[in-house]
Length: 155
Figure 1 (cartoon, rainbow, N blue to C red):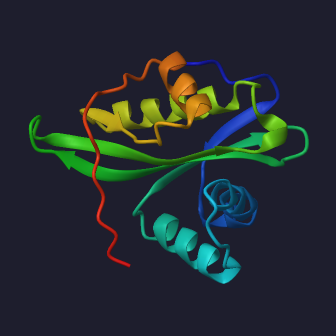
Figure 2 (figure 1 turned 30 degrees about the vertical axis):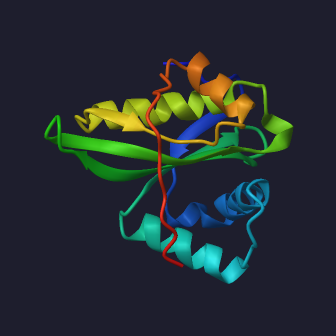
């Protein structure tokens, strides 16, 4: 596990953390060029966390309580291993907290959680041109596969 940077606390988010999580999620959406509908974001996050449909870890500055970053995991199952796996769907760190070990600590928290749940593994995808993210994942021990992802937009 990567050590948590001094002055940073990683905790599992609850519905009480929505106010801190929302601005980070807005930053995540901006990064991907997606529109921000504040009411929709709040409802989406509240439903995922409140219904136990996702697991979110939140990094906070211990002194100020400011939210620095988050990681969101969704449950899945791996047929080949006949075991649960987790999809690391979202990872975002506020620009002011980047390159300080926050992303590594969030990745480690995600891995510790999945391991504790007896999961077979964690999977994620990112765009091939997202060099900073790819370097982060490799540095954190993730392996790039040569498989090709396909997507079908239903919206």
